[in-house]
Amino acid sequence: MSRFLLGINYWPRRSAMYMWQQFDLDEIGEDMARIKALGLDIVRFFLMWEAFQPEPNAMDAGALRHFDAVMDIIAGTGLQAMPTLFCGHMSGVNWLPSWTLEPQTSQGRFRTISRGAVIDRSIGDFYANPELLKAQVLFARRVGERVREHPALFAWDLGNEFSNLREPVRPQDAADWSLRLSNTLFEVSGGRVTGGMHGEDLERDRNIRPSSIARPWAFPTMHGYSVYSSFARDRLDTNVVPFLCQLQASFSGSAVLFSELGNPQCPPGNSRVDGFACLDEIEMALYGRGAIDRLHARGALGAFWWCWADYDLALAHTPPFDRAPHELRFGIVRSDGSAKPVAQMLSQFAAEARDVVDKPPSIAGEAEHYAGLPLSIEREYREYCDTHA
Image (cartoon, rainbow, N blue to C red; front, top):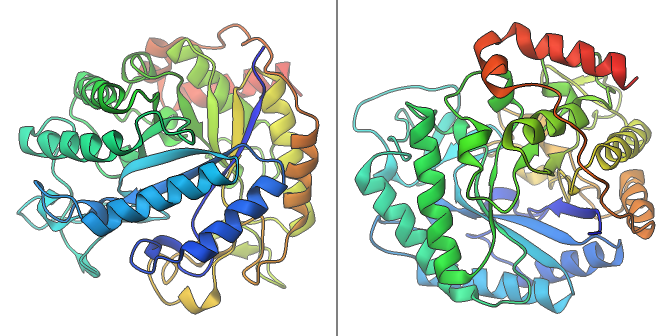
């Protein structure tokens, strides 16, 4: 039996998505030591595409050295790492190098920020455009070769909710992209690969099929939040996360690592933030315990909380927080660094050292699910809740 893994998604509280420009290894080291002391296993962190690959045929030497330092400090604290490449989409913004963008003006669902400015252009077809694929292969090779046999490397992640950057034209394009980059990373680093899929990839037909995109992965992943899910019964619904996990397992045919769960915390005196329902600190700990308990019971490989820290309020007027203030308060530690009840909950769960249980039978068929959207997922969830009260 393998142990049920607990992890954390990481940005520093003082710099958030500006981590690589405002690199502070002392802060990162202190955070890693605290994460290890909680008993967690894995840190998922994010390689901002523009910081690492400012030109299609060139990697930034300083960013690569910073990456080396982060991997070494994670290893030194006895943790493992899941570096997430081509980032990409993060907290409601698409952060991208200018050379990845389409030449024509376009406005998508999310802001594009490039070179510190909002750009009215979207990313090109990074799944199928030969030049963009070539650049991604270069990125994967240059990063992957630096950590071959590195003791901290748990797995690579091919992107954070990459369908929010752009949807593929065909499911086969996504599958080919996944295979090419997975093979590259395995060749140069020997490391396992997965990809950051999320609930909307199951709620809508985004031309992504778990059965094909996840085929070269060591395990599929999923992200999900009760307050973001259209079918959730309420903001405290602890069935949303295990349901999404079981759908992904049903379609991919493999046990799933749930690499993002959590919810936004309410600001003092408020029951909503930025239009979203939110939870107070006590509710968050209870919700997290319930959701992770259910994930474990339904055969998940592990659960990673989003995220490590509430961000310093000095960042409130910078993207993404200027338009998404709810993103400021997802952490297990407050912006002053003090621990919340959810941190204690995760530490207590880690101390139980549970083993993974067998993956249960399929709860839905992939072809029928996507053909029946949006009604199919609502029906499947009602049936799931009838079975798992």
